[in-house]
Amino acid sequence: MKATVIGGGIIGLSSALYLQQDGWEVTVLDKGTLADNCSFGNMGYLSPSHFATLAQPGVINQGILWMFQKKSPFYVRPELSPQLIDWGLKFYRACNANHVQRSAKPMLDLLLLSKELTRSWIQTGILSFEYAEKGCINYFQTKKYEKSELENVYVGRDLGLQIDVLSKEEIHELEPDLKAEVRGAAWYKDDAHLQPNELMNQLIALLKKRGVNIITEAEVTGFQRADSTITAVQYKLTSQPEILKSETDMVVLAAGSWSSDLARLAGEKIPLMPGKGYSMTIQPAKQLLHHPCILVEAKVAMTPWQQQLRIGSTMEIGSINDKILFPRVQGILEAVGRYFPAYKQERAFQELSDEKNLKTKLREKVWYGFRPLSADGLPYIGFGKKSSNLILATGHAMLGISMGAGTGKLVAELAAGEKTSIPAKAFDPGRY
Ligand SMILES: Cc1cc2nc3c(=O)[nH]c(=O)nc-3n(C[C@H](O)[C@H](O)[C@H](O)COP(=O)(O)OP(=O)(O)OC[C@H]3O[C@@H](n4cnc5c(N)ncnc54)[C@H](O)[C@@H]3O)c2cc1C
Image (cartoon, rainbow, N blue to C red):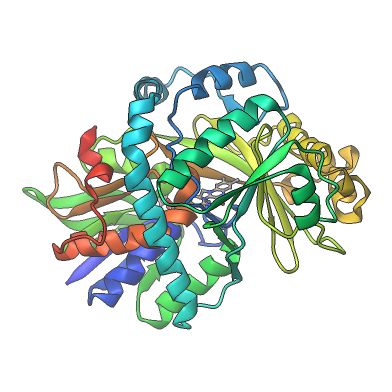
């Protein structure tokens, strides 16, 4: 039996891995070169701590305030797009406490399943990317954010997560090199982190070794069908104009931020918007930071690996574009210095933050990717309404790495018609 996976990001590749393991003859089609999609330059967090959906009370008001601050981490590109309006209305409706509460358990189930499977990739020796279980520390500077962080701590503990609340003194003991200027922190001990560039490159190599047919620079343009079944996926190679086809028994649509356009070609409707984020990676002479962390007020994340430090942030909602907004990049770097003054003296960080240098080398120094944002913060994983053999797997927003392995497993179980490892109803794309 043949399966065609559209999209070679973490979701498509994880799906390909588990489908191939179940005996499917798998083809992956990707319009790019598989060197730099959103699954590469991200922060590499596996975040059970992020059980609360992005759509939650208060985010819209906060977002509106941030819209008027040039250096803030959030921006909606003003555009008269029906897709944005439709998505925005649905997002607005999902921003309520009931929704967050209802979604927390399914989100956490998928996050924990994924973490266990990702860990198993290392433990069984099939992959060997950098991976560590040191948790994630959320630092706050203000009373207002301390309050909201502690609310998350209490809900997380009720759900069974291990979370320590740290005083300033405890933080200085845990991270002695940082000289952290913070009020306190919450240490989410179930979180883990990995090096996503290594993960992606190794996953591609493993799939090829196992016989998965990965075709790059192959843009999917349509579907051939017989009644309610897709019989072939049509695509075009960058190098030649003819339309080619991948004949298939099962299709997995995992094209990240491009998924809603492709879904439409298959007669499906999923509200989805791209959420652009930036990251910068440096090689500090000495690693000052020893645990991955989030600067809560600034919404900046920092991941220390053995040789590198990655700093990332921003959520720019709007159509796909290649602009890099310099003030927002500056905002990210200034926040690091505000929370951790020690970085102002660190050479690699100083070099990165040098305004003139950064401005002239912006494209070289700043990576960006597009998070596929569902309208309610839950991913879309499940069969389409119009085709009996189309599985949608997208909308993972800021949690594609955290939920990748688990999503791949669910996709393979759905394709086999088996009972899923965790209940998957909450992720059914048919909810819209
Ligand atoms: C700054 C930043 C930090 C992040 N940090 C984290 C983190 O710490 N932890 C975490 O869990 N998540 C994180 N994320 C989110 C995570 O990176 C995404 O959720 C994830 O990469 C999405 O994976 P994907 O496979 O759905 O999409 P992608 O990785 O974007 O892959 C989609 C693929 O589909 C292909 N495609 C599109 N259209 C077509 C077509 N017509 N034909 C063929 N192929 C097509 C594209 O070329 C692309 O390769 C972060 C994101 C950003 C931007």
